Image (tube, rainbow, N blue to C red; front, side):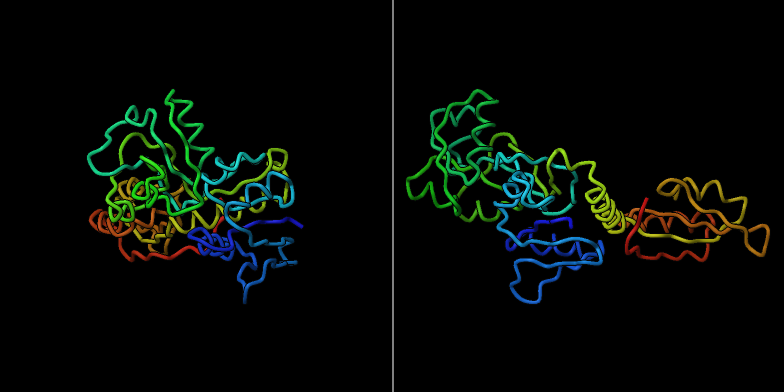
Length: 281
């Protein structure tokens, strides 16, 4: 069976379970189970601490895992990113008390508190900046006020937590992170991993696109196809009236209302939008 690790808590946990459920896997816990077996799909799903997932994958204890890119890179594990999953996007930034620092060179010789010591060390080395990295397990925002550090480096989503602590972001982005599927290099071509990746890709496409159907007079067909060219190519079918044509196409969900307006202006009628549940493209 394919062993899949997912976060047992935190911001990655619920979205990871949701994407697996939408991909057809039995991933919903009834209580606090640590393992769920899905014999129909041939997988075992292990609920592990988010920071441990890359280690388990790297050691070969589980075959694949869903975690953050930041956690993967900070772990130093023998695992590789094989697919972006499109959720839990964030940026890794430096922050300091308002008005005290403005650029990366201001960090020289300072103390940096972070929960991602490996990641920060690598970045500083690549930029030729010398600073002391102070590793903390969490709540790094308080470290400056408590005199432990001069600067922090942490994951930033909205920045509201930093502002509440009297801190402001400065300097370059260390890393742009999001949820990713990880595995070992030698398992990238494993048929079981390929099936999982196809299923997850199908869910992400279904989340981003909708199906649009409409009828259009043959004289207006070319103009409407420029508006809805489809994912690869639209489906075109004849109607009872030979002057009219039925068109089916995939369009981006976030643009669908604008596309409907433009199609209607170009002569399309009977425009219907259908949500996608899954796909294989």
